[in-house]
Amino acid sequence: MPRVALYPGSFDPVTNGHLDVVRRAVVLCDRLVVAIGLHPGKKPLFSAEERLAMARSEFAPVAAEAGCAFDCTTYDNLTVAAAQKAGATIMIRGLRDGTDLDYEMQIAGMNETMAGGVHTVFVPASPAVRPISATLVRQIAAMGGDVSAFVPQAVVSLLKTKFPG
Image (cartoon, rainbow, N blue to C red; front, side, top):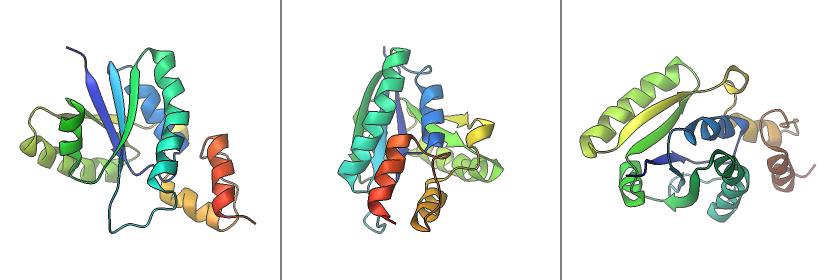
């Protein structure tokens, strides 16, 4: 039976931290599904289509190099429902620090109660990417700062289209 993992997030934008998690996740599964959450109450910088394109262009080569099948989708319901729909038994969650761990442990417990066949696997971030968050990247880019140390080069270019200046 193939091991299918779901890696959920907003990916607004894709960061080097996300890439770090994907590099670690593709060795844990046979198929990785990146699931981009769409929340009606949030106004993302990038559209769903833009985020899908970013995720595909940055993550697919990493998966291919590892021999892992890759897919990318969106969802607007519970993350565990998206995992079940994708046939995933593994939910990948990246951890930057203890605060992330506390929050993610609560979510993992709730998810496991709702969908006992989906098990959360925590992937600790590499030290170099621990401080990176998409929120901070957006803020730095909006204020004209250099985000090239935090996101792939293609994403730097996309951010410049959102914040010309």
